[in-house]
Amino acid sequence: MTSVENNAVPGQFTLVLHSHLPWLAHHGRWPVGEEWLYQSWASSYLPVAQVLRKLAAEGRSHLISLGITPVLAAQLDDPHCLAGMHHWLGNWRLRADEASMAGNTALGRHEHRLANAALEDFETRWRHGASPVWRELIDADAIELLGGPLSHPFQPLLDQRLRQFELAEGLADARHRWGHTPAGIWAPECGFTPGMERDYVAAGISHFMTDGPALKGDTTLGRPVWDSDVVAFGRDLQVSYRVWSPKSGYPGQPYYRDFHHYDHATGLKPARVTGKTVDGPDKAPYDPVLAGSAVGRDVVDFVETVRERLISESARIGRPALVVAAFDTELFGHWWHEGPQWLEQVLRALPEAGITVGTLADARARGYVGERVELADSSWGSGKDWRVWAGDQVNDLVELNAEVVRLALDTLDKMRVDAGTLGGSAGGLRNPVADQLLREAILAVSSDWAFMVSKDSAAGYARDRAHQHAHAVREIAASVAAGQLAKAGQLAAGWYAADGLFPALDARRLGPASEGPA
Image (tube, rainbow, N blue to C red):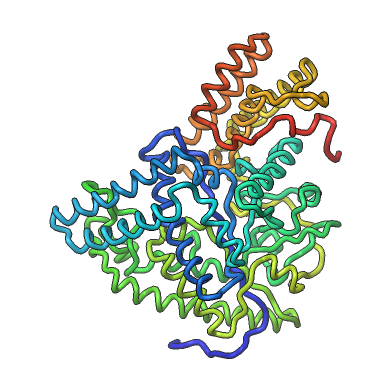
């Protein structure tokens, strides 16, 4: 296969990227904590935004549907994180110089160029927050913005009252940052249970992402869910797994940079993959020229894969088909060093091959919608069910979440009744104790903690974080219950110093206990 035929292809291809990290600010630095944020920011968010900006400047539009979770957006706008990121980028350049002085000149020069470019980009466009960066792309119609609930909870397991609050507030947060309320969302972990479509209708959501198996593998059209007009779009695994799968994909090929092997003196990654059975010290040195050639080959392969899939699926269903490939944004650059380079080339090559590229909103507007589906309990995790977030290995976190949410809501309801300051009266005032109680509760139920435990990825850190936020809820609630309001205020202020994300969060907007469909 040496080229792609340049003739019109039926249907539409949509690339969806999901950008998400849990709240990491003020919660450790290394090996898990803010370092995770800064690595992803430098390796993925900066270069992916740069790729999209470059393509938009050429007049290209409707390139991708880009999900940015509110909790990530909060960190990319946070003054503490912005200062930390600036320091991290400067340190990256110093580490590159150290590599050169230690004799690894090729690695040092490569990293120095990357660090310099990242610093210039950050200081020019990002220094005072990421919101203007994303808003520029939204306003240029380069991307469709996908939103989501505030703290990225696994929604099927969440109390419906809090679920509705998190979704409504997440959309409001997007509006505040970007002047645009998303019509589509990436449902956290693609988690779904029947009835959530009604929450989406109430929040003004018209479409959301799910995984291919939830639609029984037939992802060639979006599907209205149950009796609503909300459309579920499914990830085409045959195409998506061509790039990244649990066992294979482009980033694991020999000439790409190896993610796992570090030079411990500088923290840089000096090797290429070389081979799946080759140990770190035996891996060959990374060569950007060889990697660049591999990118070109994989672009051709992917475009041909998409082309063949659109043609075959369109023939199978007797009408133009939709192909949706979906990935974590962090794959592009953070996990796969050459990912942004591949992304830029593939977004040029697809239309050159006669393939129509559009967003999920475009797919809905253009009628890539089929028959209704009675969407069942599902996710994009292992087994495509809920085991990652509700299995035996995380049963303690499931119970903790239920306890914390119940305590927080009961305390807020009591405060509302006792004082009338949470919306119970027309003159109700905002209460920072109530706000922080709710803020800590939503941080405790982040889906990330259960995921990290189930995947044995910094499981200790994840459990500590869940219990830390639960402790905050307990001690604030205990002070309120004891009538120690001054102490409750001091505790809330102390926790806000660490967990001050979403300063607009207002507990008065939490619906009363009687609200919501049965």
